[in-house]
Image 1 (cartoon, helix red, strand yellow):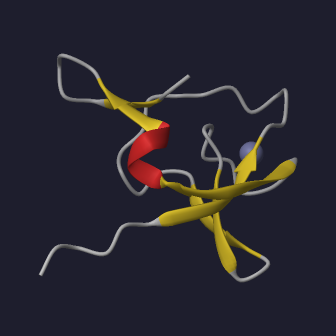
Image 2: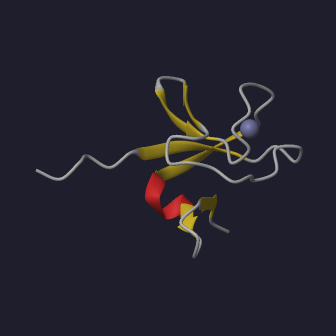
Image 3: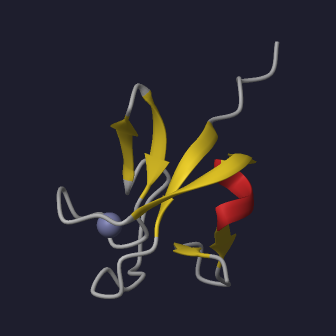
Amino acid sequence: MPEPTSVVRFLCVAAEHQPRLISLDFGLTVHLREWGFCPAGESNGHDWRRVEGVALETLLARRPDGTLVPAD
Ligand SMILES: [Zn+2]
C-alpha cells in the first residue's frame, strides 16, 4: 500500500513568511481541520489562501543536495 498523500487545502501567502529550507513535515499545520502549508514554517501570523487540494509533494522541490525547498 502506498503512503496516503498529504493533501493541502490552505496555502500561506503572508508576505513576511518567505520560503525557507525545509524538511518534509516542515510547515504543515492544521487550519480549519484541514492541512495548511506555510513555506516559512511559522506557527502564527499566516495569511491562508484556500487551494484546490494540492498534494504536498507538488509544493516542494528537492535540490541536488537532497534538501527540500518550497517549489515556485
Ligand atoms: Zn505562514
